[in-house]
Structure formats: structure tokens, C-alpha cells
Image (cartoon, rainbow, N blue to C red; front, side, top):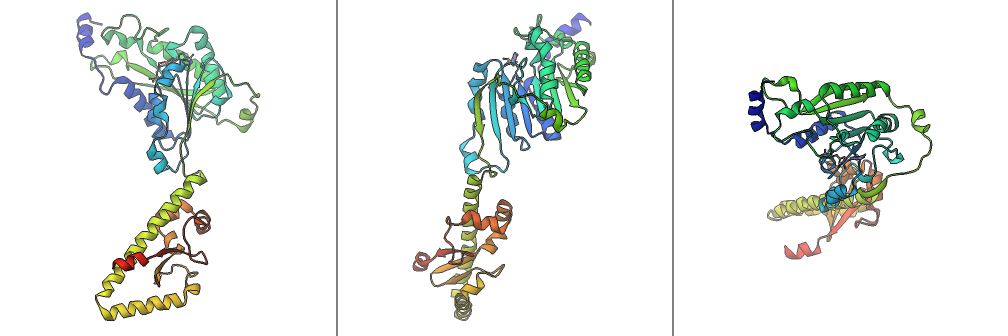
Length: 372
Ligand code: SAH
């Protein structure tokens, strides 16, 4: 390569967005494409990729692993649920766990993942660890997809201030040919296919050097059979769990009940409000008012019978407004939360004031009448 040409690029190469963000975005795009439910990030460092991934709604289990507990602990609080997560629990369940340990060791907590990410990890491994890594990740964990990213040493000549390696802790940096040969051999050994790509485009005219970060995406060729999962011998846990957060979810009956109660009361209030304003409207017109009152009295006479009828209108009886549960259930949000009418009845039983036969929400409007 022309020395002057190289020197010129050394001055100007700056990635926008920064390269680490491009790597994380790459993983996020992959997650959005393949929708894995369980994702493990090996060498998760300060948990920033895990933090990005916790917003992907398909993920229900997120795990991080790092050999350095302190780097994980520094920002692990960012993975905890926020007050808003409790106020508005999500429909999906989400558990985030951080483990302290090495990718050179097998631990049963790493089984059952759909996607395993190893972003800028392998170049930090000692030779002996790198030898064990394929058996742990591809042989033991055996997820459907593995993503491995690592620096492309051919790009280093374009980076300012890089002498030997990009980071003092790097044990090696591979050329494209070196990474691809390792990846192809690993893939063939464990029955995976591999596709090569990367992030951090080289400047125009320098395409030959390849991406700044090279990436291999490995796909398991055959689905894991129940037999191969079960044949795993029971084994001892070697990782130490340093963090675990279970997010509030509507899959948990306790949160579902709270959400249903507030939605039922909110919906009933809206219906009541509409009913009362209609009534007020009629009160300006004595003839319409008396008709309205008649129909209301008629409702109250047949209260017992009417409240069991489906799709019945809400009505006023004395100082009480009756909002039938069937009407409330027909509102989309209540309907979606509960699924069935029986479930709605079960979740609000004893928590919301109901008519004596349990078929309508009752509000006392004595106070409101006084105001009017
Ligand atoms: N994946 C992160 C940063 C990677 S830096 C990101 O995308 O930004 C490499 C990380 O791998 C470091 O945090 C280091 O502590 C960890 N690491 C090094 N050797 C390891 C091993 N044998 N097992 C697990 N983690 C290891």
C-alpha cells in the first residue's frame, strides 16, 4: 500500500456512529430478524449490549458472562427494572442474569439459549482458553445462532495510534484469512454454517482491507433434538451469579390482576361519565328528561333480570350507576388483558364493588348528585 495514502487515512478515519455502537446495532438487527427468546452475551463487560437488548420485545431471557466481576458490577444497576416497569408491566416476561466465570468452562446455566453473542471477546482469550472456547460455545451451549466479532488486523494500518494491537489486553488480532479459516474449521467441526460480514467500512479505494470489525454469524445446521439436550449429564455449576432481575410482567398473575383492576375501574368511570353527561343533557329538556327517568326506573325494576343479559346498557338506579361487566369486557384493552369473561370475573372478584349478582360494577353517585 502506498505509504502517503495510508498516512492520509490515519488522520481522518473516525466512525460515525462509533464502532462499538455499530457492533451493538448489528446484534440488535439480528435479534429483530430472528427473534430469539433467550440471548447470552459472553464477555459482556459493562453490560452495554445487554442494556440495548433488553428493549427487544422478543427476548425473555438475557444473560451476561464475564471473567471480570468488577467491570460487570460497575453498571449492572442499569439492567434493573425502572419504576415505570412496575407502573406499566410489559406483556412479555424478562429475566436478566449476570454470571461471573470464564468461557473456557461449561456451566449448566448457559444451556438453552437461542442466540449467543461474543463481541470483541476472542482476541482477549489466552491460547488455552481459545482452544476450549469452541467446545463450550458450539459443542455444549449449541445455540441456533452464534455471533463472533473480532478486530480485522488488516485495517490497523488505517487507524491512528495503533502500533501492534488495538488494545493492550488483546492476545492476538487476526487478518480476514486467519479469522475465516478458524471460523470455517469451527463451524464444520460442530455442524454450523458461517457467514462473514462486518462493521466499519473501509474508505473508498481501500476496500481490500475489509471491515474494521470482522464478524462471523454461525447458524446451527440441524435443530437440537430433545434427546441431545437431555443426554447432557447433570453437572456442577461453576459460574457465580452476581445479578438477577425479574421484570414485572402481565404473565405474572399478581401484575395482571392489578392491571385488570385499574383498567376495569378506568373503563367503568368513562362509561359512567358518558352516561351522566347524557343525563345532564336531557335535564334541560323536561320531556326528554322524564322519558329518560322512566327508562331508568324501568331498568331498576328489572335489575335482577337485566344485569345478566349480555351487552346490556349501563343504567342508573337511585344513587347508583350499574356498568355491566359484559360492556366493560367488550372494551379492547380489557378484552386483551383478560382473554375470557370468566378470567375477568375471577381477577376482579373481591377487588371492585359489584352488584349483588356480580354482573355489574357499581358506583355510588350520591356525591355527584349533590354537586349537580
Ligand atoms: N463485549 C464487550 C466488550 C468486550 S471486551 C462489548 O461489546 O463492548 C472483552 C471482555 O471479555 C472483557 O470484559 C473481559 O473481561 C472479558 N473476558 C476476557 N476473557 C474472558 C473469559 N475467559 N471469559 C469470559 N470473559 C472474558
